[in-house]
Amino acid sequence: MKCRLLLLALMIILIFGGCNANKRLSDDESGIYEKIHHYYNKMESYSAKVVLTVKGNRGDNVYELEQKVLKNDKMLSCVLSPDDVKGIQTIKNGEKVKVIYNGKEKHELESEASADLDLSYVNNFFSLYYRSEETSVSVSANVEKGGTTLLETDLSDKSTRRQKASMLIDNNTLTPKNITVYDMGGNVVFIAEFVEFKYNDKIDDKIFEI
Image 1 (cartoon, rainbow, N blue to C red):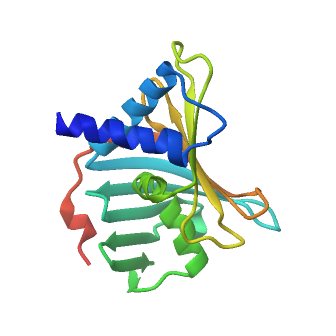
Image 2 (image 1 turned 180 degrees about the vertical axis):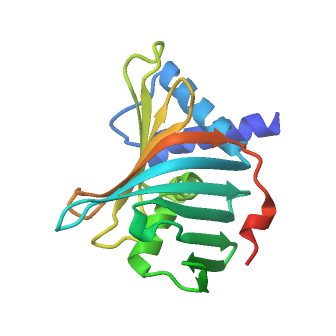
């Protein structure tokens, strides 16, 4: 009962406080939002194949990644392609970070790449979303036939390059379709498309050892 009351209180805060004040969610839309919240609140791990497209002045850079997350504070990202960066692994275990490249370890990652990588994780997006005072939720019109829900939030650590982030979620499966990050001008900085997502996947804790 206490858990139910807490969930309802959270929804009231998000819908009437942090969310777009010009739009009140319908009962169906609120139902979808509640399902999404409950689904990800129970997530203890996930693994995913991700296509990360980073926008740049000289064109797009596209990377295929494998992500593994356990208990929200243990994260691993491995580059599957292109070949010139294939095999790079970034492991985060709490505050500790390790990068492995060509079999060699180092304990730092270029700041822009690190920030992009952090924002591409599903668990990190929800952590930012629920802490933010500026959020919105938009559910596709035809809820009965599925559709999508778009969650959008301002970023707490803003810069000219990173101002807002959004996640598009499938209403039927509740799985993420993509995470998109926008700069101060509303331009897309990068988009992480989830081509495969395994909820509460069995993951060996040893892969996060640093």
